[in-house]
Image (cartoon, rainbow, N blue to C red; front, side, top):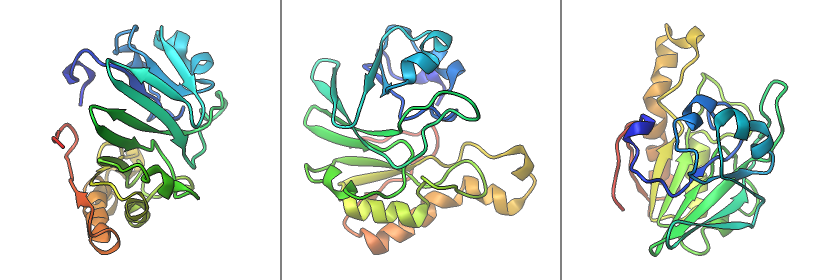
Amino acid sequence: MPVPELPAPLDAVLVSHLHYDHADVPTLRRIHAAVPVIGPHGLRRALAATAGLEDVREVRVGERVDVGVDAGVTAVPARHDGRRRPLGAHADALGFVIEGDGARIYFPGDTDLFDGMERIGDGGLDVALLPVWGWGPSLGPGHLDPERAARAAALLRPRVVVPIHWGTLLPVTSTGRASHQRLLVDPPQEFARHCARLAPDVEVRILQPGEETEV
């Protein structure tokens, strides 16, 4: 979804780690400079000046930031390499739990399964936004594929899960290959099939890029 179409005003922007597909400077420049940007320690030094960020709030696992009128964001662990490659700054990767208006939402950024993931769901989750792929034909360490994302859903036990991190990016070298083109379509469908087996009590909602849903 293009930034100008986002609802305004924004209460906060969450940056899980410094990889280019999660901390894109041109995109951050299109967000009003006064909007709080919450992310890992190292974010301010790495991106604040170049992205024009005025209110960077750096957090570590377990720390909470209050945003808006009655909402809060708590940093939780993520298993992922958060360095800004190839020679950029290093910052730990984080996930976030957003709480407000009686709702509780989990956004993991990029992560693999990790010990203690189930504890994030202990307080109850209304929605989990789970990455089910990446942006190329193969996944490196620190990512969830459709089957592992379904295992995460079984651990977290959310009421609704929305598969994310698919269908938007493909390397130029892959654009002419039909098998690679399927990576822009197949991962959420595969995830839903695995969820039906591994987390049958969790409702899966597949949204096309730019679509929205109400919970």
